[in-house]
Amino acid sequence: MTGPTALNTHRRAAELAALADGGRIDVLVIGGGITGAGIALDAATRGLDVALVEKRDLAFGTSRWSSKLVHGGLRYLATGNVGIARRSAIERGILMSRNAPHLVRAMPQLVPLLPSMGRASRALIRFGFVAGDGLRKLAGTSAATLPRSRRIDACRAVELAPTVRTDGLDGALLAYDGQLIDDARLVTAVARTAAQHGARILTRVSASVAQGDRVRLTDEVTGSSFDVDARAVVNAAGVWAGEVDPSITLRPSRGTHLVFDAEAFGNPTAALTIPIPGELNRFVFAMPEQLGRVYLGLTDEDAPGPIPDVPQPTSAEITFLLDTVNTALATALTPADVRGAYAGLRPLIDTGAGRTADVSREHAVVESPNGVIGVIGGKLTEYRYMAQDVLDRAVALRGLAAGECRTRNLPLVGAPANPVSTVQPSPELPGSLVARYGAEAPNVVAQASCDRPTEPVADGIDVTRAEFEYAVTHEGALTADDILDRRTRIGLVAADRERAAAAAAEMLAVLG
Image (cartoon, rainbow, N blue to C red; front, side):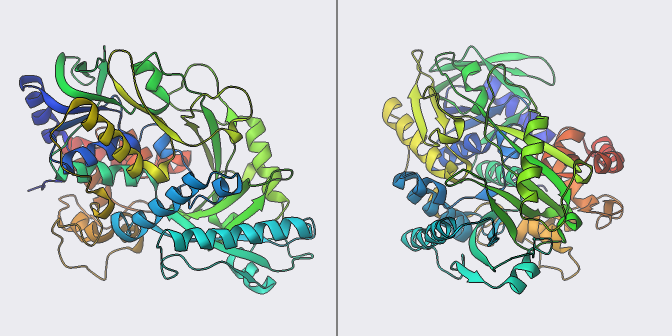
């Protein structure tokens, strides 16, 4: 028995057939990123009949290319945008304490005090961190969840970030923000929680000829098409929103990250945070991540033109990130140290000229001339708030019979308070598996039918064979790319992808 949260080929086929044969539904959501998944969850928990369709896979686009941070909104406070800063801090607290405490943890951010940083810059950053403490308190997030900022000495700074430059190091400023174990895992958890509450989550299903009350759907696996009537159609296609609704104009910006072995940074336990020269409130972060990696980011560059399926970093962005981080390192990193790279496109609202770094991260709910309700802009941290805003608008515009929003206090799949049954925790479970699945981790192994479920999928990769199986039986993975690139992040390093490909193919052959 797979249970109410399981997404797999059998459930997909049954729900797709029911949707093709059924009558009018309440809400059809187009887009399977974090915003679309959040809308589906909000709608389902209000008692609405909802279906989500995604042309490719869950978290295929921007939602897997982020910095994996649940920002408290400090940079927005620095630019005077108090509203979005306060909302970000509130939503971060909701994620960390109620929705997904298993997926978000406090990440220390270390700003080294080097001779190149003047007294004014030090004072400004320290003031910003104190303001961040104030935002945390305002949001009701305890210091036990997110510790207070403070100054530390040089010895402690080197303990947290071992490769930091020590010549002239005058200690460091230390603050805390929220860090996701993985952004794509959050999307999957939200989507599965929506399914738990009755939502139909359908990947490899494209939407076309979208109108306010009808959409043509095509099963990308079989090629068959049919029309679905809905009381409300919501466009949550992110950077592709304009393809669903030509009246929408976005200004995408590209954010690039580099992937390193953690050893290149001395296996840090804090994110080395380096101010970008000449910028008031922008930093480059070297963040310790799962699978023994460090991700270095982030850029913010205009990305005009057609939207690619998989954006590519530019050589200039790679050089910029390396040059910036090397200002704070004892030994410079080179392109040879880079194990992988990725880039994502932010779906920014087009506000005209100026740098994309200065474009507001606010979201907007819009209605197209043909009645499709769209959500554009925004940021990952505020996905739950954005979903609530969209559903409130849809309920009002379409007169939907819906309950109140319930997502503020709703634990996602894997959170200890989610009622999905689990077996008793086992001390033999790998810590990496628990970090990715939370309270659901025992089920991943207990329900596995594959041989050697707790063995790694390849030597030196701390992902178990049971996790690959679970991706297929419970998380809606239909292809090897789904497993390697989104349910896990093995695919970020080409050599690792090659070594793990056989195990992914095996699971699909047996279970797909």
